Length: 165
Image (cartoon, rainbow, N blue to C red; front, side, top):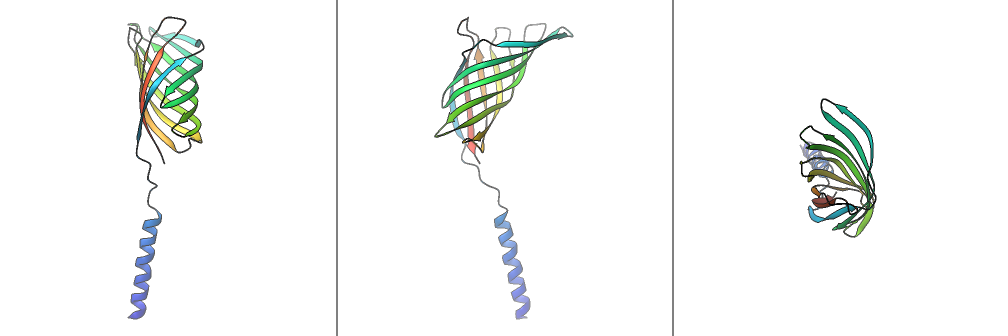
């Protein structure tokens, strides 16, 4: 009977240890951030085509600046579909050499997806991920971009939440 109890105790302890060992890594508490962004170089359009009354174009933004709780320089590529009524859908990504809190590294604004109304105001949602000093950063947010006349170009406002882990 003692041998059975010893084996049972060993089995229970091993099972408990395996449960503890496979616990998920906890992410840090989400941190809210906000700021603005703007472009410092003119956009470069490419890949024009039309189909079904819609116009398709890819626009590369070779240089932009993000300020606020996230700071740095970024590039961006967006794919626009302009519909006959003047509204647009957009999707793309941006890559930033950024500082977030006390860390620096590469921050990717990925899966940017949104719409632009006929007044030129865009609203987009994005997913955040990081590498380098921003490895394990994950988050999501929203950006609203309003047109401004040249030479300033569009001005954007972002809000997001991120965490590490």
